Image (cartoon, rainbow, N blue to C red; front, side):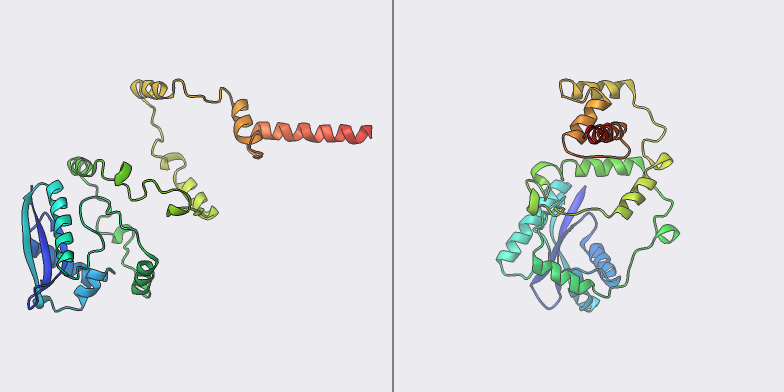
Length: 258
């Protein structure tokens, strides 16, 4: 696949304001950027693009490269080089394929909040969505799978090694209303595994993976491990109910003897 790295600037200036990769021609990609900007997307680059006259925009093809992996590397190199030269690039990241690893500062978040305040929604749901009722072909799905494999795994994951307060999801608790909605969506026919049965091969793999791993041998031992030992009581657990009944009987006997 032949790909390109393009730099966008104003015709009367030699300073690039944005560098991006594309599998199309640079001119086609520029037209796409202008269209997205006109639809109201909020990023520093699109905010800048909306302020310019389309006829004053220019795009230069900085590189022609074979293969996506090499293209991602080329984009990173061009962004680093142009920033070193003093070009005020509006790219949010350092470039490349897959997760960019961008960690937003408080100032960036506040600026994004201000830009999006009062913005009209662009979401189109149901039949109004352009892809409503359609499905990507198996060939397209396999292509994406090959291109993205390993891009968000291990150290390439932006949140790799982040725990506790450092993790962006720390302290987040899903509202009870959302929990119920998800539960209803995934119950019965809504469950992706509804009506499916694991094959003998899959069962054998699951058995091999779990072999030697300590697991509760019964519901009673599971109750002891997850409820009794942690001081947790659940109304839906038969053993919690039994333990509560025994405790009540014991207290009644003690009070009677007194």
